[in-house]
Image (spheres, rainbow, N blue to C red):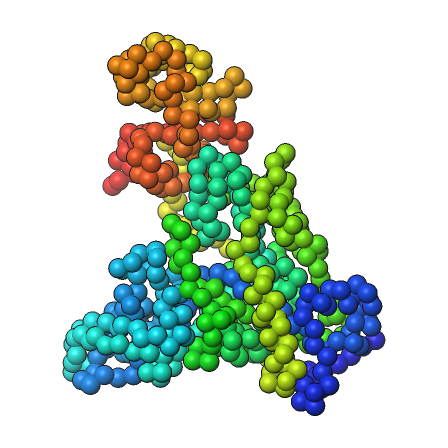
Length: 500
């Protein structure tokens, strides 16, 4: 039986006798020596992760102007920050977009610019009061001009991420990156065996007050993160640290194409090996960490799990979905995660970083609840026409023309013999085909069909229509068989009926 205390380990750090290894090396040590011997050999295991952590931001105190102003709205490089906390305090979030540059620049980039020491333009407006008479101000600041600039990130270091892929025939732009059509790729996040919360899954050493490596500075875990769901290996943490001490080596603003901005945050957490149980848990390897592959082409509430996969498989570069080899891409940086774990190891060995036990452990039994909605959004099934005419691509233009006239449908899904959607034609397509003397339907049909599902929120379908400049979508089941159609006219009628 091996028993140590954090105080004993800190004494070893001070006298230079501490034994520290990174989490990926601990996997090998536990495998070779077993948990008990590994606990005797190793005092601290360092972890690391470097990925897009959208739930991040910084509290800033600008100091008082002369004459003073009570900021009602404030912008940093044209990125608005939240000001409803005090006269000259504000919180800038990583995902807030620039009003000038849109998705190319946002709060994450402002934070990086501040850490880099770059000048940042500040503009604020206010209503005038007796004690705060000023109505507007424009100035330029650097991080040294700020009284405080404290990073407080509500949700970081997700324990486990799902893998995202896309079954549809169109590209999707998501918080999991760009997802190519027809299972063209599979994106994933997390640091695998280096991931902090996978090395302490029961939160024995990671909790309120745990000192951590945060973007090159010393930071702290201050509470469970938002959406903390450890019952499904989806634990998160709130972290805090002074950005005046941080480095852009471990912090980067970023933009995901057609999705928005974020902040790449580097976090390293030391795990004190207090006993063989903790040693065993820090011996976790990539092959032991299992996650699920989800089809992001399906509405969230009915998104299917395509398969389960280990991080060892993901890191191999391809995974099999059905009979297809799908390339995998990490959105997190394994290289930087290893650098962070290594840097934390060096700081501990130099006596520059002491460990802390949490003053309160994080809960292990909470589950994430969806938003309560007192007014549910209508779904596609509420407005779709179920009896929809279809036609084979082998049909003639004349056949299609007759079908449109007989049924009064202006959009006709084109299906294969097994009922799977292959295309769509419109009355306008037929008119053009006649003018150009086409004879076969497959010569004129639209092959890349935007579709809907019966349980998909109508709001998402409206967005698809606006984005594609179309007025009807075939409704398909999970086998891509046509079961109906939803049209802009049908949506308008439903919305008209729902208005008071």
